[in-house]
Image (cartoon, rainbow, N blue to C red; front, side):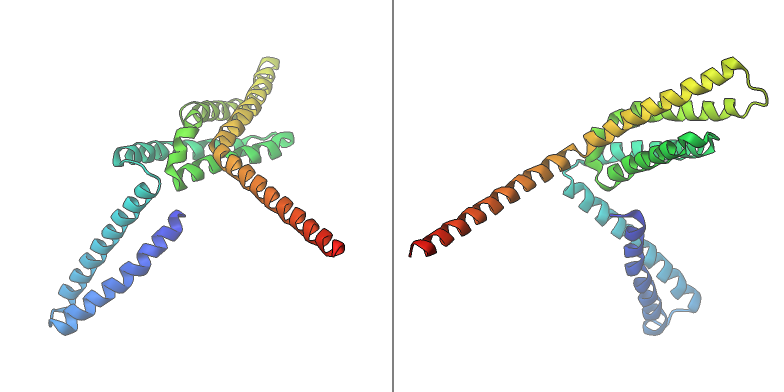
Length: 219
């Protein structure tokens, strides 16, 4: 589930609970305004915490993960988040107009890799090459390119280095595209299976219709 929607869902329960606790404390138990407010805040925080525990437990159960696996995946995703931000920032800082479309696609792919793994944690295992290798390489190259490109004087050697870096980033993008394809490979296989089933069903219906038409003609 989207993190923002999850937060809204928890707040939709927490806020009414907080208000209810305040009203019950103030009017039902004759507590002071300050005491009622304190109790309502504590009650709201407690409900918010319970909802977080419940949703996390539900997510772990849904994706058939152990708590240890879930913590491992979340830890690595948290470490990857600032790296992706740095990469996207560096890519958008590159002042090379011909490659802008390619760089926008690069940004889109890296965000997609993160969001898929965040939404469905078990996919992380299929994306390990991205998180443990390709992402680090891309961040280092993109930031180094921006640093060198901003130097006041360009030499032939520097221009060649910049060119080679752009080429390498293009290769890295292709490699990350393969990572993404690997992550969604099961979905593609499932879709192809469903397409084949649908085609077989349509074929049987067509053959059945032809059989009935032929039977009517013979009668």
